[in-house]
Image (cartoon, rainbow over all chains, first blue to last red; front, side, top):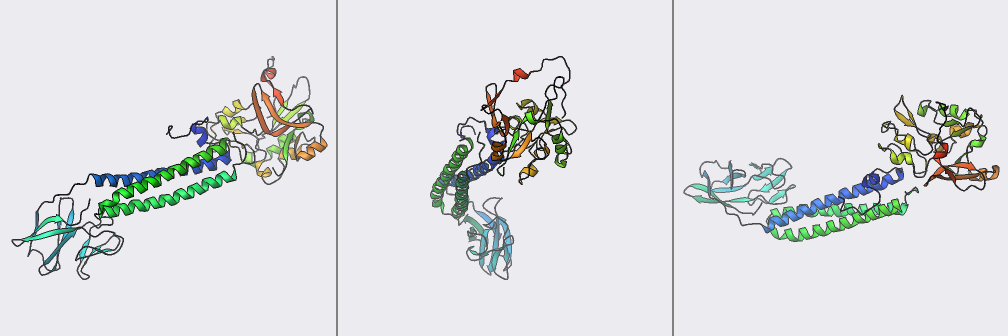
Amino acid sequence: MSWFRKPSSTPLWRDEFPVFTADEQFVNRRQFTKFLTLTSFGMMVGNLWILGKSMFHRPASYPRVPVAAMDEIAVGGVKIFNYPSADDPCILVRTVADEYVAYSQKCTHLSCAVYYEKEQNRLECPCHQGFFSIADGSVLQGPPQRALPRVVLEKKDGRLVAIRMETESL
Amino acid sequence: MNTNPPQKRGLTAIDGAMALIVILLLVQIWLLSATLESYLAGHREVALPGAIISAILFAVCLGLYRFVDRIDSEVRRG
Amino acid sequence: MFGMEFYVDPSRCIGCQSCLKACEECDTHRGVSMINFDFIDREETIATAAYVCWHCDDPTCAQVCPADAIKKYEDGIVGSSLKPRCIGCSNCVLACPFGIPKLVPQYEQMMKCDMCYDRTSVGKRPMCATVCPSQALAYVTPETIAATRREKPVNTFWFGNQKITTKVYMMAPADTAEIAIDVADYTWEGDNELVPQAF
């Protein structure tokens, strides 16, 4: 960090370990301020990272993946599947006889797995009591800020096929 | 070597600068989390203003740190 | 501190060694006296001199300590070595121009006068100045010194080209502004093996 430090006649070690106890207050403050500035730099790097990601963003192309047969699940039942890749867990819910909805299972707060609470008819996250609407995945209560990403389903030949994710997310 | 007790004014100035930096840091932390949440929700247009404001906040933090450094060297070696 | 300063006048020392014994009484340094007591030239004279640490403004001992064990406090007192830090390297012993710090082998620790910091920090006088019958070691206000002594207090020393200013004053003849000491003048070249010292 020699380029950053103002030119001084005393070497850094003499500065940081003063002989006079009165100077130690200054050293402590300066070191803490240095740490705070470093933290600020880290935050800026985070924002720049987001900017970089946005500049290199390409519209995603989604595969078509068969999820389940339409009669596979009972009314009010769920099926866990992976979409669009094997690392993305999703949850399929049969709410009423011919209505199926599917969402990403990763809670938008801290990625705990949400489950379908049948009595309340909503998706719940057990970690911090985040609740999502079963209709559109929007947040009903709790720490999550974003809605659950929805998996768009297509009914074809008695089967449910996942064709794309509705909400764009990283 | 300065053998006198530290100038009280110098110490107060440094304390003030530090308090200001902490406040700016809190704003920056909030900005980062809000930008991230917005971006992940699909509003990609927040990335640029967020980055610019974060950079401005960091520049101010840096300026305040250099101010603290200057006061420190003035008081201790003056 | 509290308006009082420490004054050393070796010409007043009668060699009673009360200062040594008083310093020893302190439990904070385990009965080890930290007075530097010199027989000037025992073969020739009974003259003695007792010294305490001079508490320099820019303490050489503190500057050379590799363990950051010696600190100068805001009121100007240079403390003895900090127990957890001192490694017994004797750097300060060699560096001090006045030869004050002593390495105590059984503790592997440097020990030196800290002007009875536990006493002076609350306004009491150091032990040695309290018991000295001739007040060769005196801890009084500058006004008292000016009123009761012919000598003038001096706190600037020259060791060759090096200027050292101290907190403790040496009483010197009235026309002396600074005291110059050429170490070469005092380099001992005699035949005797031992120079007697009370410490």
